[in-house]
Image (cartoon, rainbow, N blue to C red):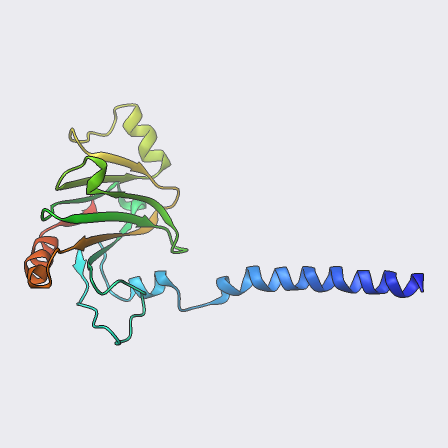
Length: 181
């Protein structure tokens, strides 16, 4: 009986270990990730306003149809990244995502920023240069350090009325995004 219980306990432990390994490795084997979907948009160093999402239509990024979205991919190995623009007077937010699709930084205009988005994104080496005053950054730039060089930003706008969507999308399209060497 003791031998049976030992085999049963060993089988449960081994089954648990196998289960955990499979669960933790499956996401890394998936070729269809948020990163690959954003990369397919070709939004390198520019703000790409995403088309309006119709209710009931395919929504591969899982976005809210009420909002307007602008996406930009950056590679900090080419220099610090900047996202700049004056956004309409309504709720907006900006988020920085890593390759795993995890938000590493996020802020909104309700954090006291106002309507001006001026975000500087730096890797660790660039942040050290910034601290040593070897990089010039304009006053008022919100400095964010990223752990990875390859990332993407997502700007979200929420127009108060559907009739304002086109104007809000046009304002978002005027925003700039890219590296400064």
